[in-house]
Amino acid sequence: MLILRCPAQLQLLEETLRKSLPTTLPVLGTVMTVARGNPASHEVLVDSWPHFGIVLTRLRPEVLPRVPLPWQQNPTPWGARNWAPCPSQAHKDPRDYYTNQLSVFYRDKGALQALLEGTEAVTQGRAFQILGMQDGLDEAVQEVASARGLKVETIRYWALISPKPPQPRSQ
Image 1 (spheres, rainbow, N blue to C red):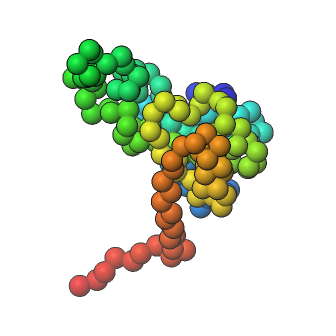
Image 2 (tube, rainbow, N blue to C red):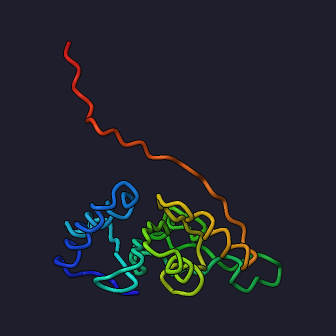
């Protein structure tokens, strides 16, 4: 996957994503944040440029902690685990899927399958959450998870967008 850093590329991607609202809403918000200074340390990845099949946004990997998961450490002789998060990383638990939150928009379901099955773009050693507003996303995630013998919790939500903006109330 390619990481987009160039302001011109991010602007072109933003314009392209605006044409497909509301399904691009989760990705578009992060692309706009990255294009305007990136205070949240996110990155934008595409499978190819400029004719992309999938856009993925995530926290930059160097922002995520590199602390091994508790079950990946060798236990001490009395059975206790030899692991504790660094004080500066105490809020970044590898089991916390909010720190490994991804947003995805895809034009091709095959690109989504390839992303979930084999790339390094999705950190498989951590709990993660995928946000997307397209039909078929939850089925694709379920297929890949069941093939790997993993448990997936799916939460469906609907975004309601009003064509008329709310009007201020007059007293």
